[in-house]
Image (cartoon, rainbow, N blue to C red):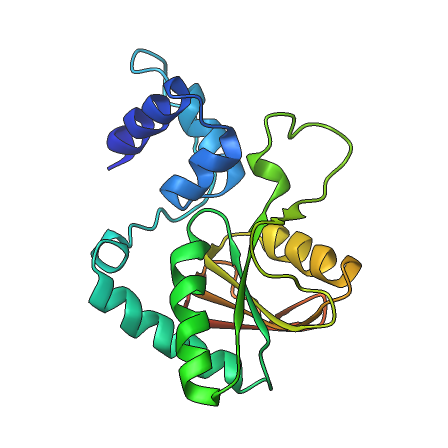
Length: 203
């Protein structure tokens, strides 16, 4: 498994992916993605960061399953109050957020818009001192809206924290963060509740 991850990370790097994009694509932490891209088959073994690689292709590759999972996430999000806008974290949070916006609209009878958050780690100049992401202007606005933030996996909580700050800076009110898998075992980030289908606990 590890050799497959190393090979995939190197392939993604050769295609111009940033470390953050590799981390998202493989559902690992930034540290693990960095470690994977630095490995060579002939090198002595270097201890890898403690992490879990997540492969949810069986959900993401099937529209029916993706819809069911998004329905469950929508139900959990609505326990925290009204939702005006669903913010999908690029790239892997977008499919879930898109379907969630439709589910929430069906469940509440209220218009629900879709917004897209591009995290700082996807930028080519990710080492710059400006560590904020951005909300795409091509989709819904968060200003004056009650917002649910959606991603596939929380590894450290840094991306979710960044999304929360960005939404607040733009005048939105984050009500919760929803994810498929919470690898950090968090119940809240910056005072905002975290809802996950699966929480991973290290013993």
